[in-house]
Image: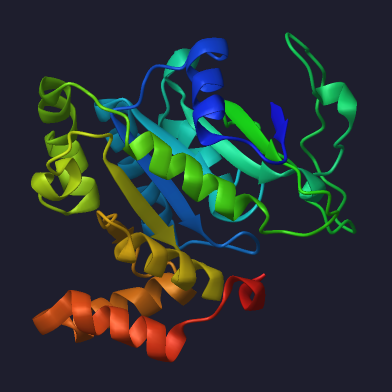
Length: 273
């Protein structure tokens, strides 16, 4: 685990590769969605869990979540438990988590080669959350606030963009990202992922979520290059809204979809948090 307040994305990436000895990602899957009280229908839950892990293992992907033991991050952890590799080095599931929102957070957890027991069962009366113990690594973002969610978003996007700029060999791109499993999971043509710069492809996966997720999706599709967004329709709230917008704007998906998001459903990050 690493507490960070004003980190440089390159320094953090080098720590992940050098100190944590994580394999370089050939794909980055950023999972966004509900952070609490999320109950997925069984069919949606199984499709999400199996599809996510099949895609990650077949492509050498990293998975980024909020890392907490509630909401969509918990479902990602359960997916790792059911469908993940028994080889811990292949469980590249990283939680980017606000330090001030974690139960049982104390400095004993921090340090090089430090091993400490961590209680992953939270107090039901507490407003804080616990870390999900099926994630392989955690980046703990500390801006000095306590009990406030959202300070990790800016750093997480900076890290994702920095990873996206990392070059990988064209042959690795072709053999991993264009596999049948990832095409089936994310349902976008391979060239949209690979692009022309041969950087690490990034894809966003949306499961449920509130107004903040709509704002995040707007950031992904408005970026240059745009980040493909895979929405799990039937998971509720923001995901179902985005799926509805996609269907309604099929004739001119991008421009009109952005217009609707900005003009009708757009909220600022402060309003969402």
